[in-house]
Length: 343
Image (tube, rainbow, N blue to C red; front, side, top):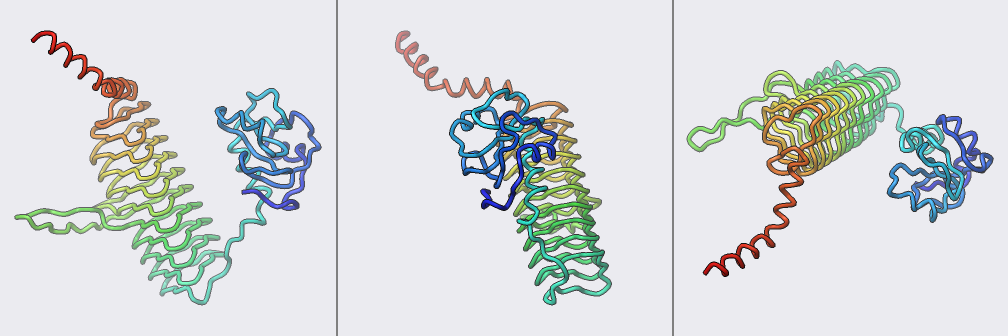
């Protein structure tokens, strides 16, 4: 995101104050833009969070770099911070507000049904549909083409991007961000099979999304059969994630793209579920657990455990098994030669 000169004009010293950073080098250097380390041009401020990219400090055209406090010297001015990525995000939020233009007011093409309650400074873009009895909190912004079902409640300061579907009787907290194409409250996948015919089981529960959750694009979160599907406060969900009926996700968990969680599984706090991991239903994942990419999780995982592979096993064990599998061709040849010698 390289910005044109003049979008920002602050010295490194001024910027360092905003993020509690320490300048090494010319603190009077003037910053006129913000960009990634590879894309940066003269006058830009960038950041370095991953040590494996430290060599890019030699080639970047940026005027200065935000780094961790571990960096003690550099080929150009730096601002040392506790968390470079977080500091860079804060700089963008503080200095680039003019670049973020959100809609305001209620567009005439929005469809607001009866008994809808709108808080102060709500923004509704064209073709938003609010069904009977919906409630929208203060300063929430709903972009074009979004449907909010009857008696659904959405809190304050939420940001709902275009073409989101939030069905009936759903509860969403404050400061929730939902990206385009996501569906919340679709029917849980429940059928009773009798003599080869699948009979639909009504799904009459709800979904509860607590405060400070962010949900990526094209995510599906199914409503409960009874009770609720729960996404607890602070959880962040990447694009293309499927969360089935009656799942409970604990606070501050991370769920990465293409993960799938089957019904009635309980996820603890601060859990990381990596890309394409698949979880069977009716299991429990303990607090602080890590499920590695493409893990096939078929049984409960204890707290503070990292698992990988299929079926998922403790990560160190899974790595050993994989190493043995990679050597199977060599083992086959050795056994073949041994067999020939014994003939």
